[in-house]
Amino acid sequence: MTYVLILAAVLVLLNTYPLLVSQDLMFQSKKTTLQRHVSVMASSLAGLEILTPEGVSQVMALLDDKDLARLIVTNASGLIVYDDWETGGAAGRYAFFSEIVQALDGNDVFYSEYSDGAFRSRAAVPVMYRNMAIGAVYAYEYDTVQGELLKGFQANLRNISVLIGLIVIVMSVTLSKALTRRISELLRAIRIVREGEYSHRAIMRGSDELAQLATEFNSLTGRLQATEESRRRFVSDASHELKTPLSSIRLLTDSILQTEAMDETTVREFVSDIGEEAERLTRITEKLLRLTRLDDKTETEATEVNLREVLEKAIHMLTPLAASSGVELIGNLENQGTVRATEDELYQVAFNLIENGIKYNVPGGFVRIALRNDEEGTVLLVEDSGIGIPEEDMPRIFERFYRVDKARSRMAGGTGLGLSIVKDTVERYGGTVKEEPREEGGSRFVVRFPGKGGSEA
Ligand code: ADP
Image (cartoon, helix red, strand yellow):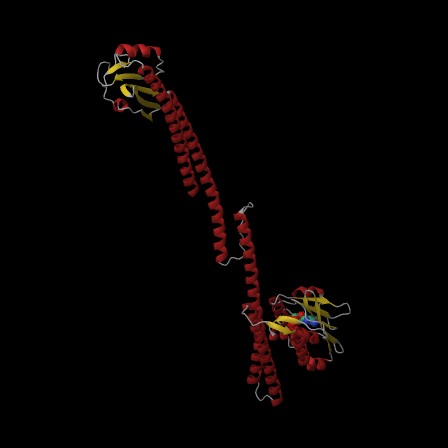
């Protein structure tokens, strides 16, 4: 609509401005030629001193009247002494045209107008003799030749404008229809996705902005779908994980209540099992809360944390577990390394990795913890001589609740959330974590934190 309005304005301008300019040019040229013409006549007549019909006629016969529609000569009192009109004219009468009156006052007069394809021009000049107006020459020109020219020009412009207008209107309507159809398709897709149908995709051909918009929308929907799926999986996994210890507790309490005269040792054993399950529930909920906090991305006060001190603390805490599992903890911590994070979160990362190294190890094995710096940042290595991770499970071990060997993890008090917490935390501070198998058996976790590494110790 806007384009059509702009075009209409342009066409109106195109139809008026050039015409006005050419009309003006023609008026100017008429003025010069007609005025010059009557001036020549006036100068020729000036030689007569007194304008009489005979004298004027003689002079006029010698001059070219240049296709004038009418030529009138009056004397000083406005009496017409010559009129070239074929049907007798007004000779012998007084002329009261304003042009003649003005010319007798000593003024050159010119008027021109254009209408209906004809220029009507009038010019009058005084006939001067010794600085006195002894008469006036008045000429009237009726020109249809140039008028027709202008008329043709006007008609051409109008036809071209109408044609352009029609083409533009047809094109605008067609284009806007196509555009509206495509936008409606996109809107429809947005509405369907809003209703929760995340698998729907907008189909849009071409490579214009709308097609790009559709592609962006589809990839956004794809991400939404993935997030939604992982959320669903998380909720169902979490409920499942929470349900298992709860059912055990339920089963144990039922057994205690329903078995009459249960001996005290069995009761104690069952109650201790209930305690263990409760502890397990606490562990799971604590880890879930930790993950939720990571998801929320609430601003925590990150500071420059000395990673070596954090590792020493984690090793110290896990030494009793390592000793009871017959696993040796080796800390290669000659290097310093600072990481921008919170101490508590870094401790959690170190603790989870070292604890896994102990949990999934064999008696007599070891867990080696090393700290390294390079130009890109600080690197933490945790490698063990344990059972290792089968290749097919590697891509999934960082998923929430994923465990290679459920029973073993359960026995070791695992929740399947430790590595998810490691990954989420590390990535939150711009780092990466990856697992690689060791050739000698066991696995190696490499955590890379960005930023300059600390100084060599
Ligand atoms: P969990 O609480 O079960 O230890 P994690 O998220 O920490 O959960 O680890 C997920 C799974 O990855 C574990 O159940 C285990 O099967 C495997 N895993 C993790 N670390 C190791 C390791 N160092 N050696 C062998 N397997 C490991």
